Image (cartoon, rainbow, N blue to C red; front, top):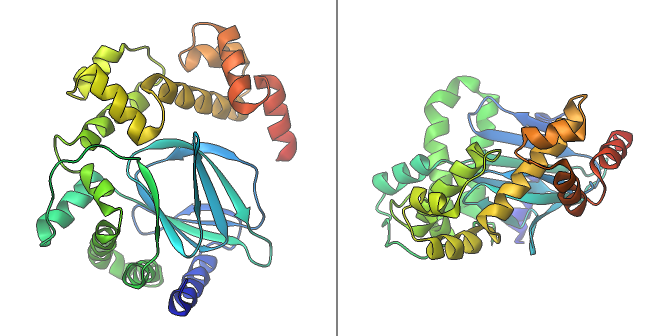
Length: 299
């Protein structure tokens, strides 16, 4: 990391720290911008990375997408080009030097606007690639991000300037070495766009059963293409993707409500509580009741 980027990341860290006095993740006055502060390293956390740009100003984080590991620090930025279930963990943080980060959510329409308003070529349709990547941070992108966060100091400027700076940020990301992956979700008819449509459908209907032929029709592709491109983007099959969503939601329900595992199993789409318990144990390492007890004790 260059000395200039190191210094500018320090400026960004001070901004984030100013708006996050306590640990947690906070929505901000800028639509689609979230900031996070964590004062200690964490256990692996299961969750969904939606389509977004993630930037660490201080500390280090890892995201695990099945077998693919993505490590990012102030020298990098991470992009999720589609919604993905991941296991994330802060691996460098302390009370004196907390983990400080931001997330900027991005919609396909945001990308289309940038493509329309700039001389940047939309490009041809390309075969789908992994829906998550890490790139090296560049000065123009970091400068735009800092100006974006600085708008929190002048809320009256946000309605006018935030959309403009967000376009600049997306433009810089699209110019990056892997920017084409993000661009593809906005290109109608590309395999990434088609897989993104299927992912959205599964996420909205994770508790329902489906046939693979139905998903292929929704994505406007053959069954074999669906399997191939879905695995390329997400590292898993559509059924495995659905299972991840079901089990993550089940864990959340068990933590937040006074209910038993069998009821939760049916609510997230399982027909057999015993199958639910087996798959829950395989994913989280403990049966539902023991896992929730362990998590509550940690809290």
